[in-house]
Image (tube, rainbow, N blue to C red; front, side, top):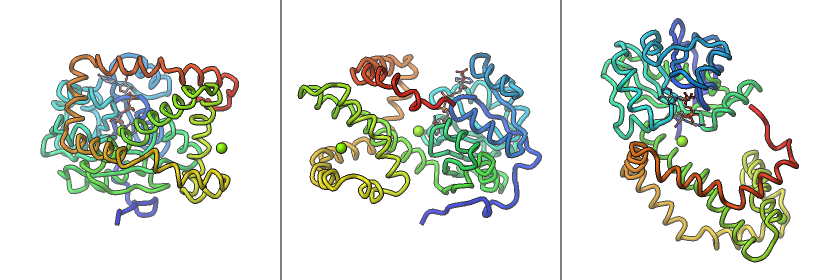
Length: 331
Ligand code: NDP
Ligand code: MG
Ligand code: MG
């Protein structure tokens, strides 16, 4: 059974008197930094000059270089993109770590796949919210949070768990629950989730559904509403009360169709594909491909991104969303 920590189970604040450096001020970085500041912690930002650095200054943070911030802080949370963390660590962080510091991550990728190997005298942990950074901030300001995972890779001080949990509390996550895991489990399940279901599986399914209707001669706008726009309403019901609440809310016709047709679409073949995806995550093949792509300047990545942006569903959706300004909440 997974161990879950809430506000009350994280009693003493192991971060008292410590300076926290957040490296990066993007999706996760701005949310961690602002939430930690609001819970009374000393936060500085480590960044190169640019858009994020300007935004962090605008928001009232002290912005230093990554090297300076690492030197000044007791806890260094790396929230730069996964693919730049290896070089960033080597060039600016490694030499500025001190014994007893804590090095933290929002995703286990670089530790798990051996891209970064910290010295033995620092604590290494992860605190990974299970949601996009903008929701980590938005839910916090609303008095809630996004649940998070935490794991300790290396416990040099004997306090790594307390520090990790205090950090998770500082970003608000203990309000809804912090689950204990390992770097291996967080990394592999996170990659699988985003590839097979949340991002990859979902967009491929929406595209296939959209194409099936449009190729059969139905109007693209109807197809968009049917297989894309309505999805949020369905997901909201599942999010609130599981499949049961969703199935309770839809018509009997829809529920009957759900049972008889869902398994005709997501067949054993689709599940075998998921198992292949998981295998490549477990044996490091996916990570190796991503790292090599990055070293080459992301040629394939950029080509796939351009191709996806050119899909008809994107143009149809852009037009329809102009009529629905309420769907695009600004953060
Ligand atoms: P973003 O791409 O949103 O932000 C990255 C930040 O790092 C930016 O502020 C960027 O600044 C900065 N940065 C980029 N390159 C460098 C560099 N060479 N030196 C210094 N700073 C740099 O990243 P995410 O927030 O998406 O991801 C951060 C981490 O959080 C990753 O480990 C990811 O796996 C994890 N995570 C992300 C989630 C998400 O919701 N996005 C969810 C859970 C975990 P600049 O403007 O200068 O480019
Ligand atoms: Mg991820
Ligand atoms: Mg219907």
